Length: 162
Image 1 (cartoon, one colour):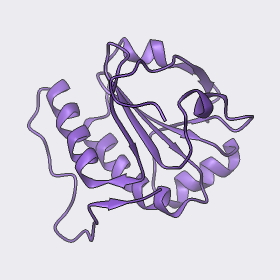
Image 2: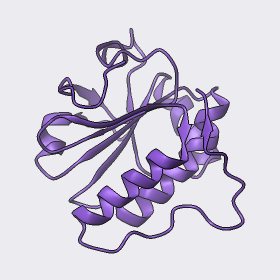
Image 3: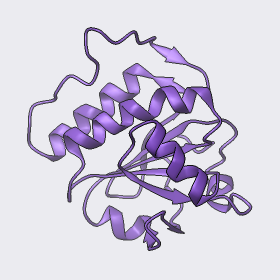
Image 4: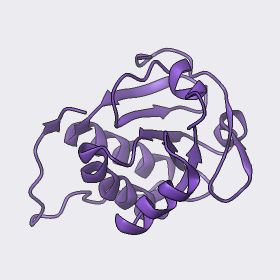
């Protein structure tokens, strides 16, 4: 898996919206969070609602949040509906070309990529600390104070392996 500090490989994938999306184009607007996943993965199912919170709080023209699904578009859309996910999903199902370039061995795997194209955070599984760090970075980009990502009522472990 690519580590923090490495250059993120550029790619173009089709989204569930039917359009092509490239990492290089998205990075011109600000940092990009990539969340690689499979719909059958229980840790992905646990993690994605928290990524949705990040997107709801900070997703805008300065911050991009993308899921990178290793399943087909229809199954991915059903996953999004079931887990209340509204951020854009890209499809990497045929041969996993992008997943392979990023060295994905387990899901979920998250990469926060800075505007310089370097990976700032690289994490497999659910990491409370890394999600809070991503929230801080997104808040800074948007020039707003960081909002709490986790509610007091959430039962959240520090880490869940993918």
